[in-house]
Image (cartoon, rainbow, N blue to C red; front, top):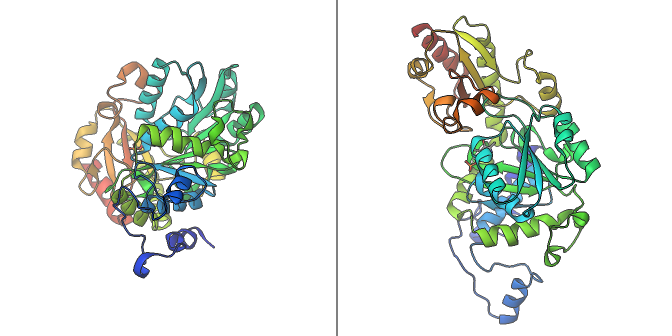
Length: 408
Ligand SMILES: *Cc1c(COP(=O)(O)O)cnc(C)c1O
């Protein structure tokens, strides 16, 4: 079956109350047991069942299964936000004295989180992840994992995903790929040997900017038997599935960044149309990037779908399409604020992955806190504008950009 058919009915495999055709929103925090022995077995992991809402909820479980299916993985854990998924996963799997390697082109809050990890005794090295050689040269005796994104935001660098995966496999390192920008529709990191996959569900998977959420998926390709940070109690079943248990028990249960059932419901309904939205918005992004690329008032366009993008070939080889994000630098003398204000259809907003097209002046907003030096090292120019293209009609978008450029 194709991507959409496969996920569309996934939450109806278990019998659903009253024949409801979507998984209902279960708001109960706790569940009753007629036999106290059953409750004990649920707590001891000998029987499947629901205990307390911080750890498990039927609406959330149905969403987790949908994400697992999308990623071709073995199990997923959902969280209140994408940041909670990343933070909880690293918190559950790393210890003081460990080291990990991360891409220097990271989502800004992930970068900020990793800096906090180093303040707690877990050291991080940032490298140019467009080349596996720079990852290789950062590996030390205490390196435990490598963390990269697929297409970086805002400059759209594409990580050397396959070679970094090969390297991690050779060195026995956990390979974590944040797939938010590409989504499981365009790319499955399992195919490049990622052991764990992160998705911010807030973005494309939910797709309507009406709920926050995040997930980590265990792909089943990493052998955890030599990973000494796992507790004995959680090493149950196949060694390729040990981490997700610890992420749920030590991570989610102890940290408590739980996804609420209402949000899970919104995200699950949104996920049903992921493929349709991605096809449409990727085509829109490609068309606009090509239009802007030749325009006299635009100095540079960064989009992996353009043939002059440094990782265009890699993007074409790895991903089904080049995504919905591009960024531009305007020609000298054209003010980025004036240009954004001149756009009519495109909304000035910080999110990405919405059905509506969004624009943001990057250096002055989401990357302001990091300061001019770090911005320069990430290649973020003061005039850089990031666009997250939505599902509007292509002609209307082109007209909006064209008119706004004429007016500045
Ligand atoms: C937005 C985003 C996150 C964080 O997700 P939230 O749901 O906003 O917490 C993580 N990684 C990437 C690549 C993102 O774009």
